[in-house]
Length: 265
Image (tube, rainbow, N blue to C red):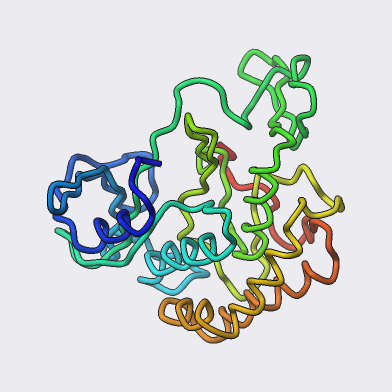
């Protein structure tokens, strides 16, 4: 993330002036990159106007921006800071989600397609594939605590679209998840490339974090989420936390929903 502290970043996102820079053309919904400035402080951000959201058969129209903000609220409550600061605000194309832009190094990474005979030591293999020449590859990710924490977050948020391109690792070693418009459905829709820990114990400290989340869902966190989600959706967040606290292990796919998003990266 930029050098901005979280309170300063939120103030900038809420009240700064947006100067649109361009559109991220690979995004399925209207996703704009912009400069944002306030009182001499400036940064880049991602602005996703509600009016640019494509209708989905399983998510109510006009709710994706609020789900992006809900993901930030949940991620912040974990203490893992796994989602960049995000707010709901008015902009040049109307109300939308506004999220701090994250610069990612050009090299390295914690997941991706690698040659089947060159999987890094300690990585988890998720999916087998071949390129156009028939050369075998695998989709794999590192056995990394930062990723496993993000995987716990995704279970709680019921993330239906954790692609590899939605995982950003910065030069200072932080890992962020982005693009959370299709989270928090009341039905189980978890689709992710982070399946490497199925049935394994949750990462160190996760039980304490989940216990804290459960308490806060009955208080300030629950009230904050209720500004963007339905009562049933908030209740299901708590139910998913309860299931994780009982199992103390990562779940696996339930077979009723595609387990991996497409494309996976």
